[in-house]
Amino acid sequence: SLLSSPPNNISYYLYCLTDTVVSKMANVYKLSSSPLVLGSTEIEVTDDIVLYAEVDVETTLKIASSNGHSYTLSKPSGTNDQRFFNIKAHGNLSLFNIKLTTGDVSGKANGDGCSNNNGAAICLWHKSSVLFLRNVSFFNNTVGLGGFGGAIYAPRGYVEMYHVHAFFNWAQSGVVVDPFHICEDYVFNDYNI
Image (cartoon, rainbow, N blue to C red; front, top):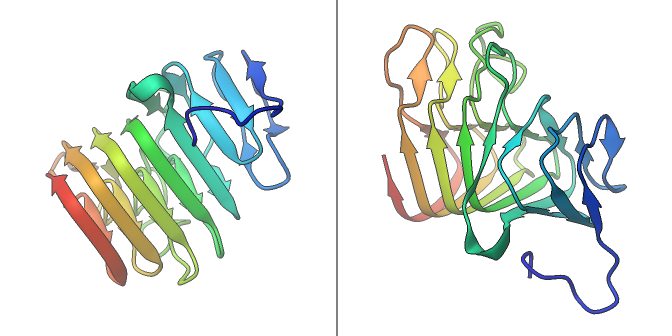
């Protein structure tokens, strides 16, 4: 389980992480001073966090709020060129009980793909990329003019969502955009926009 550690498992309580490799499988850069409990490629969030850089997910990464709470991942104000997660080829991201707010890619160039202004919170571009969400909210994320996916941009890959809420996800022009631009393998149950 993401919310508890197996017996004899060493976990670390970190107050600050800066350009640190969490494990061989996942890189998390410049996290705020909010506490985290880490174990291999599973991260237990114990408080709200400001994420200062986009996280490239290249293997398996699971993130969950502790004790059934729903903590918030946000971006620093004034940042307009980074989403939260870019799921690369063979990347697998699972989020549980998390709120994602203020992701902003409006400063990126217009065009296709995750290097552009699509997917203000999460982007996956490869057919081998996987995203699993349970009890996740997307609020106040911004794509650039002509960008797609105020919350998620996934023209390829596999996305599965349960109890997902998305509201007030914008285009740079101030127009509310569709939160999900998902074109291939997509399974969902109970999401609200």
